[in-house]
Image (cartoon, rainbow, N blue to C red; front, side, top):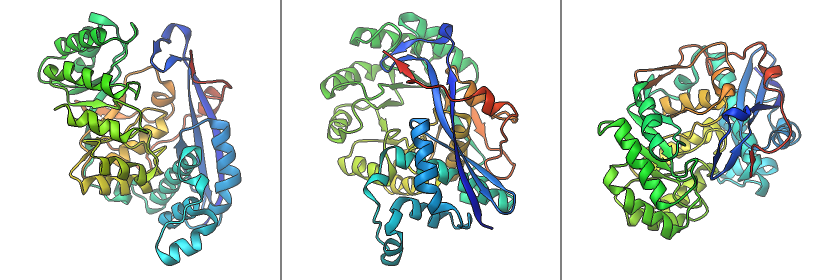
Length: 389
C-alpha cells in the first residue's frame, strides 16, 4: 500500500454572539482546525487534525510535508514521522540513530502540521489492519475516566455551573482561574469555594490558569486554594518558564499540570528536568501526533508521572485523544469540553460514547468515525482571529 496524496482543509466553527464570553484569552468568536486527509492506492483515506492557523498549516502540509509522505507505505508510520521531522537529513538521522531535525520542523506550526499528518497516517494504518487505532498503538484499556472541562461562571454562579457537570456523572471537573468577572485573588477564591459547594467533597476539582500568571501571583493563588483539595493547578505560569513553574510546584501541595503548549518529547524533557510538573498534558494535534505522544507517555512514565491529554478542539482532535488515552498506561483521565463546540460534537456521523463519567473507545477500525455529509460545507473556514480583545 502506498500513500498517493496528502490534503489539508481549513475549517472554522463560529460562536454565535449570544454564546460568546470574555476570559483571559479574550472573547471567543470562533474555533479553527485543519482537517488532514491521507489517501492511498488501495482506496483507504485517513483523517487527522492539526492546531495552528489553518491556511498556514494547509500550506505547510501540501508544500513541505506532502512530498515527504507521498509514496510511503502507511504501515511504516515511524519512518514517515522521522521523514517529516528530519526533512532533508532523514537519511543520516536514521543511519546514525540520532535525530537531526530541520530547524523549522522542531516546534510551531510545522510540528502542528506534522501532528495532523501523523494522526491521519495512523488512521489509515489501523484501517488497513482492520482494528481501532488504540489497538494498533498497543491497547491498555477500552475506556478511561473523564473530566468535564469548563468553568467560566462568575462569583457564586460557579456553584451551579460546576454542579451541573457533576450531575452529568463526571467525577472530576475543571474550571478557569479567570471567570467572566475578571481576575483577582478574591474572585478566584470565591469562585473555587462556590464550585466546591456545587460538586461536594467526593468530586475532584481542578483549576486552569491558561499560563496567564506571574510566578509570585501563582504561588499566592496556590496557597489560597490549598484548603479546597484541588486535584491539580494547570498552567500556572508561561510554558516558557519551566523554572518558574517548578518554583510554584515547590511551594504548594497542589499537583501542577502542564504541557498543552509543548512541542515534542523535548519540551516535556525540559519540564521533567526542571521538576516542574506532576501531570503531563500533551496535545496530540500539537506535540507530534500519535507517534510522538507515545514517546511522551513513555518518557513521563519513567518519572512516575501521570498523563492527562489536552483534548480541547475539533472532533478529530478529540477522537485521536481517545485513542492516545487508551494506549498510554500512565493516562488516568481525559478532558471532555463543556464549551460551545459543534465542530467537536457534530462533526461525525457517530456520536462519542461518554457515559457514567467515562469515555469509551470505538470498536470500529481506524479512528472509528466518519465525517457527516455536510461537514466540510458547514464548517467552511472563516478568515480572522479566534479571539477578539
